[in-house]
Length: 329
Image (cartoon, rainbow, N blue to C red):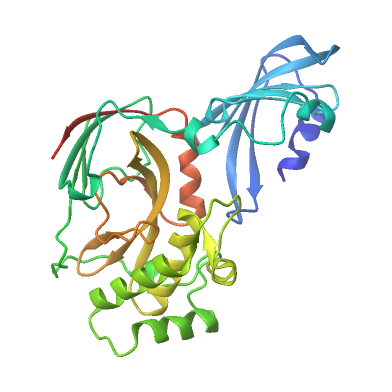
C-alpha cells in the first residue's frame, strides 16, 4: 500500500544513487502497478521556518515523474510534478494560512488548455485537426475510432448520425460485462434500463433514449469522488464522470456494448479534461450524456478508453500535453 511505501524504503536505508522497483496496490482500480524510485541527492530544505534533512527522490509511476523530498522517518516533506502542482507538508493551520472562505483556484480551469483558435459553434463542426506536443502517445488510445494520429497530428472526423452496420469483427464481451464501477448487472440498473428502453428494438434508438434519460435526470454538479453507477443513480447528480458510468451501466444492461472515454473537450475558448462514452452500433459511436450529444462533437478528443485502470494513464497527460488547432470545419 502507498501509505507504507516510503517508511519501507527508509527502513531499508536510502543512499544517493539507489534504484528500486516495487509494486503498489491502487485501491481505486483494485490492482497493482509498478513504481520506480531513484535517489538523486540529499538536500536541506526549510518548511515554515524548520530545517529538514531530506533525500531528493525521483519516482516514476504510471508514466509520470514526481520529485519528492523525503524526511528521516519516510514522511514526504515536499513534492513536485503532478499536474504541475507543488505540495509541501504542513499542519492544518499552516495549510489554511492566507486562504479566505471562498476558493480562488478552479482546478479544472487551472489544468485546462487554452485554444489558439476560437471555435464558435463546436456542435456544427464535422472535422478537427490538431497538433499534440509534450507527451509520448505510446500506450494511449489516440489512434482509434473516429480519430487518426499521424506523428503529432491528430484528425477527428464526425461519425454519421445514423449507425452504419459493418461486418467488422470486434471483441464486444468486455464492453457488456459489469465492472467494479459500472454495475450493469445490479437489479436496480437492469430494471431501470428496461423501463427506459421499453419496447424499442433497435439498439440505436435504445442508446439515444438512455442518453436522453441520463442527460435530463442528473443535476449537473461538480463532484470529487470515484463515481460508480449505483451511487450516481441514488444521488441523481454529478459531473461528466458520473454521467459516463451511469450511461455505460444502463447501456450494458440493455445489451448495448458501451465503454468510457477520457480526454479533452472544447468549451469557452479552452480544452477541458472530460469523460464521455462510446456505444457499439455496428461501429463505435461517441455519446456524451452530460452534453446530450450522440455523436459527440469533434472537439471531444479521446486519449484513453476503459475503466479506472486505463483512465489512470491520464496522469501522464494532464499538465503535460500541449494542443494547437490547425483546422476546424
